Length: 139
Image 1: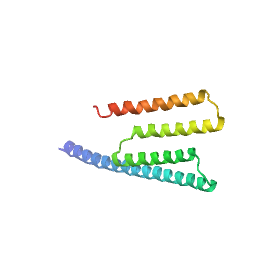
Image 2: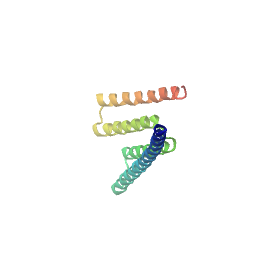
Image 3: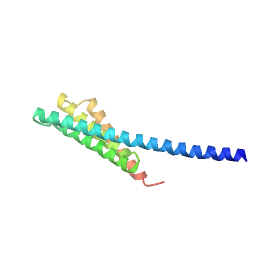
C-alpha cells in the first residue's frame, strides 16, 4: 500500500515538473524569437539609416534589405508553425551570394574564378530548392 502511494506521489510530482519544464522551454522559445525578430528589425533600421545618411542606396544595399526581409519572414513562419523553413534559409543564402557577386563584379570589373564559384553555388542552391520542393510533400 505504501509502495503504491509513493509511486503515485512520484508520478504526480514528475507530471508537475514535466509541465513546468515544458512551460519554461516554451517561454524561452518565445523570448528567443522576439529577441531575434527585434535584432533583425534593429539591424535593418540601422542599415537603412546608413543608406539615408549616404544619400543613395546601391544594389548591394537593396539586396541587404531583402536579406533582412527574408530573415523576418523566416522568424514569422517559425513563430506560427514551429517548423524551421529550410527553403527560406536557402533563399537567404542565394540573396547573400548574389550580393557578394555584385560587389565582386563592381570592385574588380573582371571575370575570375571567384565569380564562377559564386555562380555555381547559386545554381546549386537553386537546384536544392527544386529538390526540397519536389520531396517536401511526400512522407
